[in-house]
Image (cartoon, rainbow, N blue to C red; front, side, top):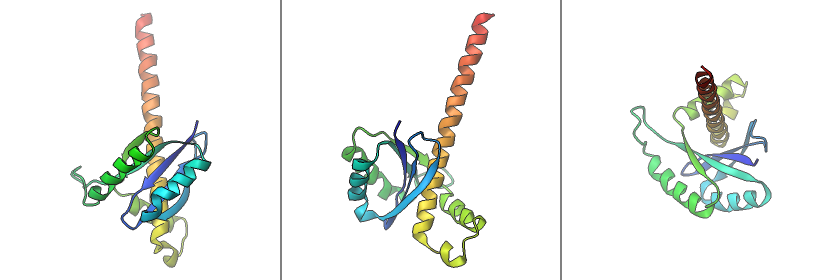
Length: 156
C-alpha cells in the first residue's frame, strides 16, 4: 500500500497532508506556495510511494461550487495529467478552515500561532484527509454489512 495525499488547494498556498504507508494515520506534511506545488509533488513522489490524491472540493451550503472552485478544477485536471497513474478523488471541504482554526484553539495554540495561514492550510489538509479516510472506512463497513446480510439471506 502507498500513502494517500490530501491537497487543500489555494491560490497563494496549498496545504498538504499524507497518511502512513498503512493508510491508518493522517499527518500534516507542509504548506507549499501554490506556484511551486507541481515541482514539490514531482520531488515528493520520487521519494515516497503515493497511491492516490484527495483534493478538497469547494462548495457553498447549497452544494453549488464556490468561487474558489474555478481555481481548483484546472489544478485537478493538471494533476491528473501530470500523474496519470494516481487516482484523484474529491471530498467536500466545507468548514475545513473553521474546523482547523477550532482545532488550533483546542490544541492550545496562541493567538499569534493561530494567525499563521500556512498552518491553517496544513491543518485543513489533515481534516480533508481524515474525512476521506472516515468515508472510505464507512463505505467498506457498509459493503461488508451488505455482504453479511446477503449471505445470511441466502442460507435461509
